[in-house]
Image (tube, rainbow, N blue to C red; front, side, top):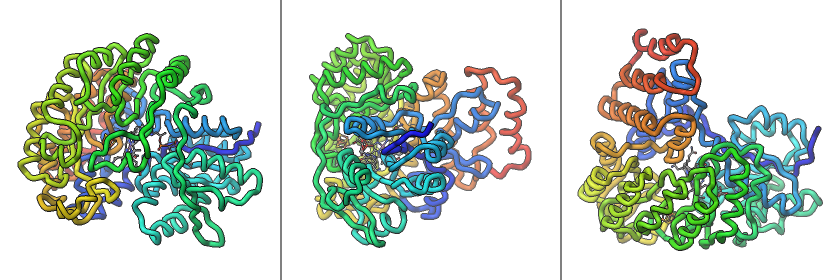
Length: 561
Ligand code: B12
Ligand code: SF4
């Protein structure tokens, strides 16, 4: 049967890490981008492997125990949920693929079989055009008539940060799409494009879009979309066939804070929250699906306002949902009662944007947090057995070797389970850019310097932290995040073994930093990786020795390390 589909939504495309590493490596070993990425992967058999890649390598061979591979695309996309629900509400038909790489054959089938009017490419996690172009090439191979619409954070970030000629080059000459939607929301623009295409109407009147005509790129006027969460709930029933263990859920849009390093509130607009009944309705629907084991609340400040947060937790306890949950949390705003409620409502862990262990840097960041409150917050969370992950930035304007040392000490003494210290990424749309002169900031992105530090020194300090901090476990960033810990746990690996795995990955990174001429991970590190997964797992492979020998055999054959 072929279906009439007004819009086919395409979710995350995890780009080939080897290609990405190659692009970044060509920027040179001293570039900030390379130094940042260098802490995120190990090399084995001439290929780079992120933590997720290493997990998949071992478990795809019989040397491990066939745990399912890990991939960002396995979480059901909130963007698909919102766009699909909005389209349905407005009378349009839609279909979707959540994870481009895994669902390629289904996508090809849909593109050939169904009458697809448009394809919408979601760009939540893309910072480069590569994954978008790969999707478009694929779509065009199987369907030459569907109009292609690209929207989401990639488009709006590029519009905000690129000058006119670079933007024209990107949208007109680099990405072969028909429309670009420039909005932090974009649902309304999408509906208007579909309406125009269906009824042969001009698109020039639709706000917030770019389209191509006569080899020209035309931009229409901008007008902020302000779709209310309470009026546009997700209809989770529409997606039940594809929702498995993990779901991203949001109960708010944007954030009421204005941290000086962060461009998110500017991007997302005015902070708005979904009312308690709305949250309950969505969680009830998710619970009824029956497959959801873990919810990732993606609100940037889930616990603000605090009373609303407590009401949500009490509602979750009352409903005795079967899933557990994790979220971002501002731990300077919690109290004993809140943490007890978190525990009772099945919180498994929290991501804490602590950012610095130095009061002055926290002030420069406008972080609205102080060290004492951070310590108290972490202790409360630990007392209730919640897993804590702390995220830190090194190199922010005002940073010196001494302030970075304070951060290092803070991490060492924090009691956090996991941490990551990251290089400051200078974005011209962030509030700190208003203070360029004060801090003598020059450059941007990962190539900057300011009055008290440059990107090279900040990268050196991060390397030293990775080499010397004991206690909390360092987590890489690329293709692995706090969320990934829970994905491993729900694949059947104990938290203890997840920690073991990450410690070995960390050992591998340390080895890389200490022995820069060693091209590949050592036999010892590979042996340790294999050992973790050999001891446990859902399926007992017939014979692990052959596969194990394949992985370790490279070393006997004079492997270059
Ligand atoms: C959860 C999250 C993650 C998780 C993802 C987990 C998972 N499995 O899904 C993790 C931690 C792994 C992650 C990683 C990264 N993330 Co992140 N992440 C988020 C977060 C908090 C939520 C994303 C989300 O689902 N939002 C909810 C959905 C509904 O919003 P949305 O995608 O914007 O979609 C809406 C509209 O944009 C629109 N829309 C989207 N696509 C399209 C397409 C069309 C055609 C139309 C019309 C509309 C449209 O429809 C939706 C409804 O309004 C956002 C911040 C935020 N609160 O949004 C950052 C965010 C998406 N991340 C961001 C970044 C930069 C990253 C990293 C690149 C960081 C890094 N340096 O490594 C990595 C990328 C990893 C990778 N391999 O590619 C940026 C993206 C900026 C950009 N694309 O330009 C954001 C916006 C944060 C920020 N700094 O501002 N992230
Ligand atoms: S870092 Fe988090 S709390 Fe701060 S402005 Fe950005 S989203 Fe809001």
